[in-house]
Length: 232
Image (cartoon, rainbow, N blue to C red; front, top):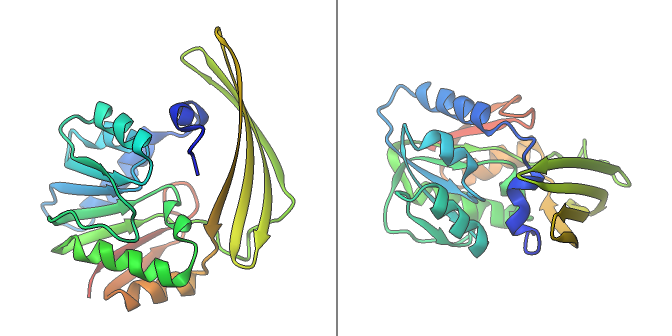
């Protein structure tokens, strides 16, 4: 995953409008008409959403990447952030809202681990709470052999990323090559990311198997959709 490029994650995704996405997350939460106060951000990354949500909620987070967790703690010192695998974690507390954004759920790869992960979410959710899951792409829209390039700059660091898409069965493969340039020189990294391609029907089935009622918003935050789930 982002093992090599972790320290530059916020540079890579500086094009994302986290403030607007945080507003949309608040809208999903407020539609539940509950006095929600706590959020668990699963696969929290560098906690950019928490920067804009922490004034409204108490936010904790987990991520598999220790460097992300350290960065998240620096951005939201009041939050409890820990290194944990979303497919198997035990935090010893429950939350009003559990969110898993920016298609991070795809990293579980298989239907079996998808169900296992959603069970973890349910077990950490308050009885009247809500789960928000932003999915990865579906199998029918994934294109192999696609090449994309993005360039951006933040705080004096220039970044160029080229990606190539591939596929093995229902696992999408993204091969990234990065160039990061600053006054101290140029760095090059290459990474491979693998995410499971789940149909809408498979996602809904997994939520139900995990003991959750779910509805699907086709738009979501950035056009990838959003699953809104509650304990059945």
